[in-house]
Image (cartoon, rainbow, N blue to C red; front, side, top):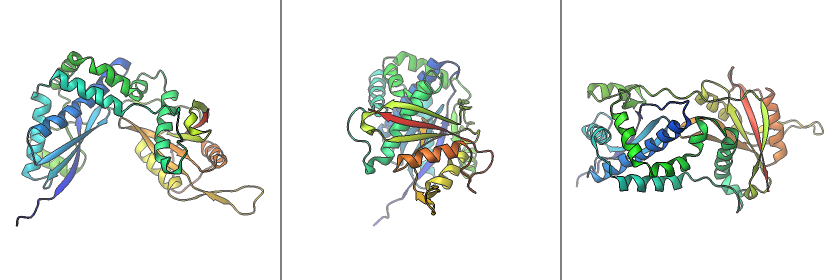
Length: 330
């Protein structure tokens, strides 16, 4: 009896020609068209009859993230054939209007925001769902009018508009195909060496936008969120050029162990736990939604953090955290 070949997961990015970041409409179109292109790539590969690999795509604005489930190792023939097939799909396939419209409409529903108008989001089992929903709502309010983040945070609307603009997608795709920026972006040195040996088209990742960072150390907003029943959350902003490291430091320092809070009336410090969830916007990062069981502990923590008094050996200089306290109202 033949042993079944095992499947492994390989992750690459796919570089695209970036939009003009000063043009909000261009940013929104690029984000929507690139997401739909990824879904069209998935479908075309599945319909090609390839049994060697499966593709899942995601946004890493302004590029795409590709997750391959393939038989064998990254230096194997099936994986090479899979890369060649996906490349041909991107640069040569002709996509149908009906498939494009269907995917754009369907994908827009996946990004549709929860408006927190009904139900009970305060249930303990909904902690991460709650943090994600409130985090996005807070970012949408904070970056209203921003030429980059506003269209990305409203990607559901951008996708609905894209569904009515197949001709625009064709023009965008033609421009992408004519760009020298197109190509696979290996994330590991070993993958880079293998792709070079295969003469596979590689590229540098696109220049990512410089996101606005507030200078206000502590601010407060109020969200109409009846489903939150008055519960308070907070959004921590990494005011750093190295946001990935900033997020990791914060997580290690405050999200995996209890935090001691000294209360003057008590002789012993009282401990509480912080619930944390990094919030990504189509692959852009730098925000962490947080909460505590007792809102009073959260108020104390964000005040101490914003004032620079939450010292930890995990936090390296010059990590600076700005905080947006999010109060929910009925």
